[in-house]
Amino acid sequence: MSNKRVAARNPWAWVSTLYFAEGLPYIVVMSVSVIMYKRFGISNTDIALYTSWLYLPWVIKPFWSPVVDILKTKRLWVILMQAVIGISFAGVAFTIPVSNFFQYTLAFFWLMAFSSATHDIAADGFYMLALSEHDQSFFVGIRSTFYRAATLAGNGLLVILAGYLENYFGSITHAWLICFLILAGLFLFFFIYHSFILPFPGSDKPAGSGKSRDFLRDYFRTFVLFFKKEKIIIVLSFILLYRLGEAQLVKLSAPFLLDAKEAGGLALTTEQVGFAYGTVGVIALVLGGILGGFLSARNGLKYWIWWMVAAINVPDLVYVFLSYTQTSNFFLINLCVALEQFGYGFGFTAFLLFLIFISEGDHKTSHYAIATGVMALGMMMPGMFSGWIQQTIGYKHFFIWVCLSTIPGFILTKFIPLDPEFGKKL
Image (cartoon, rainbow, N blue to C red; front, side, top):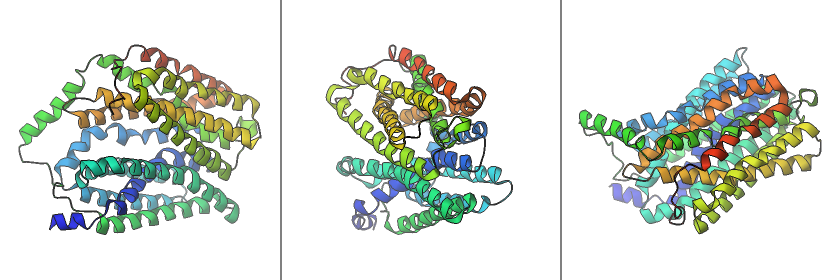
C-alpha cells in the first residue's frame, strides 16, 4: 500500500509548499516580529532582548531532535507542527489588541519558535525519506528557492502589506492583526493540504527499538565525539564569533530604518522598510549566496574564505555611513542595504561550508545539528544585549561598535582547520 501511495505523490506537489512552510515562521519569529514591535513603540532594548531569546529553540534543537526520530513518523510531526504554527499565528493576531499584548504575543511567538524548530527537524528528515538520492539532489534547488521565497514573502510582501493596511485603516493594531490572521489561514491551508498530499514512505517509521540503554549510550557518545574533534576550542570559538557583528546588526537594522530622524534613524515608512530590507535586501542576499556557492564549488572553501570573511563584515560600514548622513535618498538607502545583504549572503556561504566540513564523519547529521545549535547560540547571545548598547551609545556609535565586533572573526579564521580541497568535492 505504501508504495502505491508514494507513487501517487509527485514531489513537485509538495516539496515547494513544505519548504515555504518551513521558512515562513522562522522569518516571522526572527525578523517580522522586530518590525511589528517597533511599530508598536517597544524600546530597542526590549525588542533585541526578548526577540533574541526566540533563538533558543534552534540553539537546543540538537538535544530534542532524537525525540522526533523515536516518537511517531516524520510525516505526522510535519502536519502536527503546521497546525500548532497556525494556532500560534492566530494567537498573536487575537492578542495584539489587548492591553498586555507584548507579553501575550511573545508567548505565542515562543510557541511558534519551538514548533518551527521541530518542524525543521521533521521536514528535513521527511525530505530524505520520501525522495530517492537522485530526487534529493534534483529538488535541493527547489527547496532552497522556496525557503528563500518565504523569506521574501515575510520580510518583504507581508511588511509592505502591513504598511499599506496601516495607512488604509489608520490603525497599526488593525493592520498587524489582519496580517497575522492571513498567516494563520495560510497555515490552516498547509495543514489540510499536506495531510492529503504528503506521501507515505515505507521507511518513515519511529526509530525507537525499546532498548533505552543503547539509545542513551549512542546519544551521549554522539556529543562526546563532536567535542573530541581537531582544534575544537578554536572551532567552537569561530562558530560563536564569526557573526558577532552581524548578530547585533540584524536586530537593529530595521528599527534604525524605522526610527525618527531625531532618534538617529532614517524615518522610513513600514512599506519602505518592507521594500528596502525585505525585498531588495533579500534578493541581494540570495544573489550573494548563489555566487558564493558557485565560486566555492570551483576553487574550494580555503581559496575563498578570506574574501568571504571580508564580504560578511566590511559592508557593515554602510550603516555607519547611513547613521552619520541620515540621508533621505531612498535609492541610496536601498543601495546600501543591498550591498550589506549581498556581502552577508556571499560571506555566509563560507560559514555554512565550514559547518559541513567540521561535521564530516560517522555522525554527520547529528554533528551538523550540534554545530547549527552553537551557531544559533552565537546569534542569540549578542543579539540580546545589542538593543541596550544601541540605546546607551546611540546609532552612530553602535554601528561603529558592530564593525569593531567583526575583528574576532578575522583573527579566528587564521587558526581554523581546513582541507584545501574541501568545497570542490561537494
